[in-house]
Image (cartoon, rainbow, N blue to C red; front, side, top):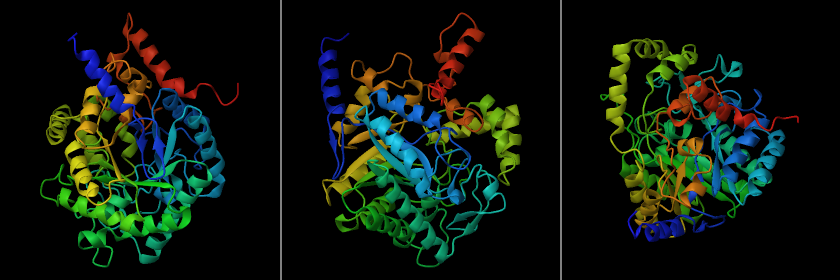
Length: 461
């Protein structure tokens, strides 16, 4: 070990574990659990016991703040079944218990208010005969999920659904809300020049495309006031042409910066921006990592009944040669950088927003799991904090590890097996290489035991 290593690490940890103060929220460190969760809940959108255990284990591991998984503001806007929703006041007691659990560890909890739009993987029987609400009538180009352009009354209805979701989050005693405006969901579908083809006041230039989100921000402020934390997750760049290079690329970084400035709304809008990239989910840049072909072929079959292009995708994933070609395209479009993949975008947002309001903070997502990379991102003023998901699934106590070492002994390999398994299995780390054992069966049993740990303690003891 280099003689100065311990001093360098001490400087890094002092920066990482310093308080992060937003306008109306203080977080004990600069580490946030990004939005991720499994199908842990009741079919009707009420929260389940497994989710309580899921959220609590990250709070116990030392994370400063948890951003909830995709939380639908309406059943029409869910991406998967068995995800806890915030569409009615009867959901408030569950979320109040979530807050109580994580607050016991001095951890904050931000609910991510979300709507699928056309990007609805498995919306359930309630949505079986409905096309996804969107800014456009065009289906998404990856799965072929069908869409219908929203009418103005439908836009007004969804704006109100977001506002009431925020009100319920505040009544539940949570610490703030995040609007999911990245990765291809409804707000992205309005914001992106690669998707939004409307000719009314909700389309056209970037100001028109951002009108829907601005109306949501103002409606939320009407319901919760200006002393409740509100942040926006947004693509730095859409990269909408990752699969088909002849389609429109979507928003540029310059457009994103202008939209972020607009959403400040003269000091009455958002308090923070959470920077990501990629106009679909999945996308080579989100979650940045590999595409495990065996898992892709095994678990993608659930999409066959959902999208018009899913059968073609499944045929490609089932063919060894075509699957490897698709994997090579995925890796090429991702690029070589995984940890900190969105930092340049976050830096541009930070620099522009900082000139307008120094109190606005910027978070960056992108595979963070090493203290030196996290500290450098903050020290360089690219962002004020980082969000992470898969590295925390691999090591639930990653914050405690980073307080002592530069990174975990068994790192997240960014294999993305966790997310592919989530289509049909409990969410967890499915990278068998991270588990020790004398045989395959021994290692597999240990992996499954860790995956199933979210169900302990059970509902009834």
